[in-house]
Image 1 (tube, helix red, strand yellow):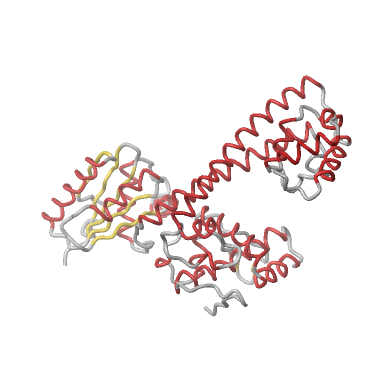
Image 2: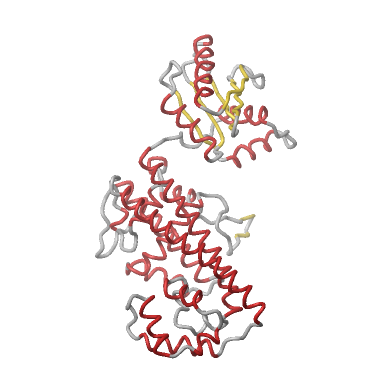
Length: 417
């Protein structure tokens, strides 16, 4: 029986370097070549591999490449879906770059770093075994993933810009986020209008109460139950705030205006992405949004990052999401305090934690569990409780995706695994 052909591909933005190995020769490559990272290049790659298969009579071929974001996406999809190498038995593996890095260290402590060496080690990793799940591709889920990951990055931008805005806001209006009426909703349309409209706290204090009420009703679209109370609380916070010198106040106002424009733009883009995500999710059968607190956004964020066929247990899924804890044990010693693993899919982890924070508010089973963990005398009680709640949610997500069942709102689904 002929040896399988192991094809390692080091992917670059412009060119991809290929190394082909067999089991017959430990180190000497059967073939090396380079092709451009575009459609003509991938077709040339197909021809070169076809000639090897025809000449050597291979019956099995394994392709491996590192996950390098957008640069590896087309190559993986074309090899998996579109290219014909004259055989049916082929598998494509997309490796985490850190896995190849550690594999190199385990064989050569001072291995050089270049494309030819990297391609050889990718092929050698294929040959060594202990491989991850083969690459799979779902066009609807990949399209949804583009939207949910875009939303993730915009949320990061919004958080960063909001934090910067708050530093300038404290200089201008120190009690705004402490005793002001918008301390729990600082980025609402009305709150941003207040920051932008009044050049100083003195201007807000000196504004007649009836005019301030009209301003709040107008920008709040008449949604305040007691606009007069809001206006009085706002002026009270203004009176107790620090005052800024005029020259510094002008600079702070300009910086805040810039941040507010960015925040409004991001908020508008988030609305557009939300609609796109909701529309796209309607075309994909799923049951995650049957869980109280998981709407279309969280369901899409979780669903788009998971190929449930690749996971046999919820523990595997939790580790993939980065919701597993390290172990520190030696002899009779076992550490009581451990941290979350640093690896894992950061997008999936983000959406699971955000979903858990929402589910604990809407579902009594998760609310009870969160309260129990939060009450334990541990460091970082709230963060720990939320992470544990997210880990509990992983079991439910795994069960729903595996069985395609709806969530039982009466008491929840209790998994026995």
